[in-house]
Length: 150
Image 1 (cartoon, rainbow, N blue to C red):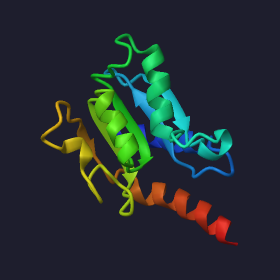
Image 2: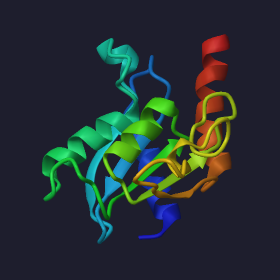
Image 3: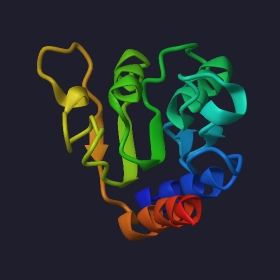
Image 4: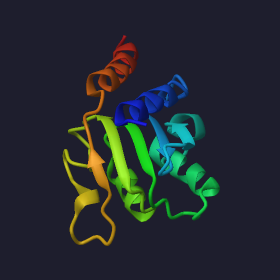
């Protein structure tokens, strides 16, 4: 699969967010491009501050991945640049690649505000590719927030 296809899958996952949750979707793929898990933000729906799409997808992928919590060889695709919590989870899960859509200049930790995943002091540093279908991913978020402001 291509990175564009990965982000299209993440966009589809974002559509599973409740109408109260920010529509961010994440999908974990194994080294062969097979989908292991997908999730949408669920903080509002669950009352769990850690229920970001990335964290939920990582948890689900770890439960089915052959190497448990070590997601080496896997790619996480997400519609929005991960925050510090999610970037830390990606490093700790040893995800090999992170592909994301829209940049997040206010809280992004994979190149915008911070670049946690490429910090040379860390033992694991995933490859990162950002801005894939950024306009499309950003439009989903703008529509959500525009509707909230009405």
